[in-house]
Image 1: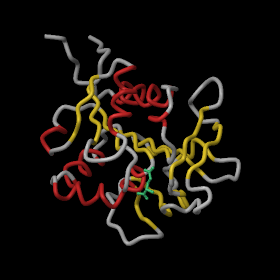
Image 2: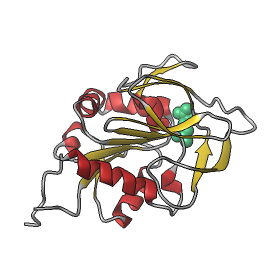
Image 3: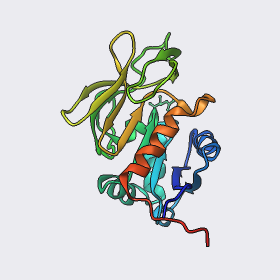
Image 4: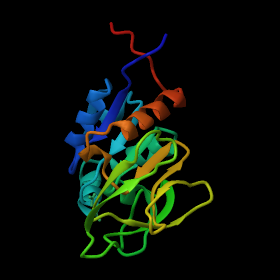
Length: 205
Ligand code: GLN
């Protein structure tokens, strides 16, 4: 019995969560805003939005979400992280003293594109996304400066700097697909959710 409307959690403590939710709804997914540990129950995938990573980590602690979220992701919950969300998942942050979730084997440098280019756009070619170039919107994005052997780089800037990667069920982009009308990245993530086989089947009753 297949299911057309997976339940996707969107971490909704801060940042671009409503934009992610809108993109998911346009694709027919059911959105659950995640603010408390019990909100994680029964979701089939989760999105960590952009925002401000230090604030995110503080809010994860005050809401007591840090450990259940880390546990859910490390036990296979399909995850899409964008910008600050990538920093939260990373194994390490080379520029700041931060305790991240450490579930994605990359290190990042925060705000490392530099002041003049804090925000920029570039047309991207992303492995797994068919069709025309994908518009990458970068807003004070982190630089991925190292990636472990299980991390596949799906996209890099013309400069060679990686901006999208995947480690098994975790997909990470340092740009913001939630700020453009192009839904292909969210669609790609929903395919990952379906392929993960974690879909708990909603019968509509
Ligand atoms: N500069 C932010 C940080 O380091 C991330 C920015 C974003 O998510 N757009 O936390």
